[in-house]
Each structure stands twice: as structure tokens, then as C-alpha cells.
Image (tube, rainbow, N blue to C red):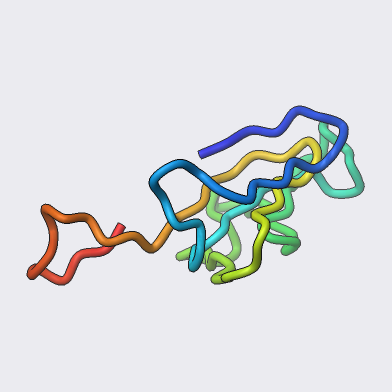
Length: 96
């Protein structure tokens, strides 16, 4: 999970002890930079809460990528799921 309040993108080329590739990204940004908008962009897709208080699509798709570096856009927040093998989960088919 991250928040980038900078006025420029943050480029992440490595994280100690974690292979950043492959990964699934969920990056939230304001449409047209409007931080008071009633909608939000998820990986560039407009998301507006409907009258039923639900998002238009669920589950929300992430973007799978192996691109380097990981780019956290200006004024954005979100989370990234890294495909890493966890030793305690080996043999039970789990990846985090």
C-alpha cells in the first residue's frame, strides 16, 4: 500500500528482499487532477459509485505487469500485489 503526495512520479526499481516483478497494480488517481471529484480513476478506468452505493464493476481488476520500474503517479494512492513465494506456504499452493 502506498500514497504519493509528491508533485512528480516516484520510480521504484527495487525493494529490499522482494522481487518487484511480476506484480498486480491497483493505482488510484483523480480525474484530470481534480482532487475534489466525485469519481476516481482505477488504473485509468473511471470509477463512480452508483445509486446503490456500489462500484460499477466488482471485483475490480488489477493490472498485471512485469515492467520496471514500478511507477507511482503524482498525487496517487493504491496498492501493489507482488508475486512472491512465501516459505511457510510452500506446498499448499499459496502465493502472496
